[in-house]
Length: 215
Length: 228
Image (cartoon, rainbow over all chains, first blue to last red; front, side):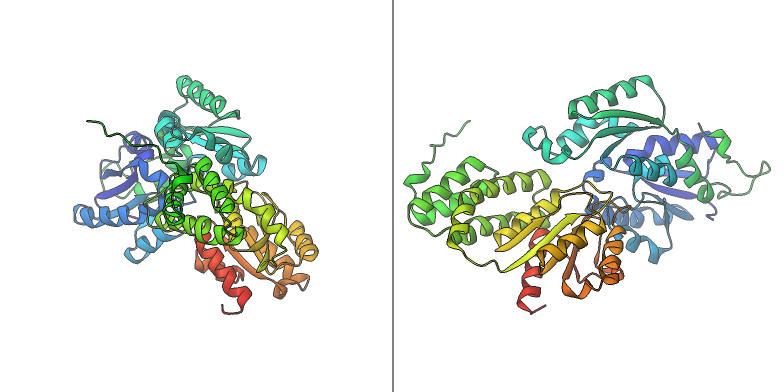
């Protein structure tokens, strides 16, 4: 468990949720710095970006934590973190820690041809999915990318109806069925809590974090 | 200020100029132009195999290197691959008629639970371009299906692909199935996919991990030539 000041190096695509969980739990000892969310589309660049960030902030905190999963780095991120004894979020990617491993496993078993969207990806669908896959320039590639998919699953965090409507529209645009699953911040909070709660200086109030406080 | 460019008439170019132009067109994903250039070279008496090797595969190799180096990204590689495919479609019947013996045979598929096939298709195409016969089992392929295909087709190489950390362990299931049936040592097993690495390949008992299509082709070639 971490102690003292904690610096969380987070993927920009989950910044909103990490900050919300921190604030809801009153983790005043936790500072969050983010890397560009666009790295989601270039996972091979994540290990170096994280490594550079660690170098930049390592003297600013007692403990560092990396809010990335493996995120398509094929173990390369772990090869950066393990020698430094820095922990990261568990699992393969943000879909897994937003849904929780068991629920995510059930979703993929239920339909392997599922294309997942988080709230962030719903908001930034045009930039990260359409432009990121080059579909704005080459719409004829849509079949090659999505031909084997059957549905879009919105793994929702904040549960807004507006985002749900947007996600349904994205599914329609891709010609896929739409499924909505509301997970809130619970699974991510459950992953963050063991490493971030109680990590700050001891106070008269004792541990400041609790899962019940997270939405 | 705008610059004006004259349209390039491919048929007016010398062979050397045409090949350079076709490299550019393939790099830029211009399928119609690559097909046109392929037909022009055929009309000039080039053998299909030579066009395949010296123009399409060589052009795609340039694309592969730039993808590996982070200069090109997946959309551009797909467009280039589609262009190569347009040229190959003209060459395939001619190559079949020549009766040239493939340099090897590969059975390839994406493992059970996984529906991603962009990388697998790219490997299949590059293997075919390199002179391999390719039997593509598609996506979401079960161990039993792999085993049955290996018995039916007797390939030199089994290629397995997975894009997900949740599906890549299934490669071990396939290899275990082959081992149980006494088939494992009859084939070279190559594995690939974004979440894989060399360590994983060794851990599951594959013969090699291939990080991209070009590496897959070179690795397969070394195994069939006995130089691996």
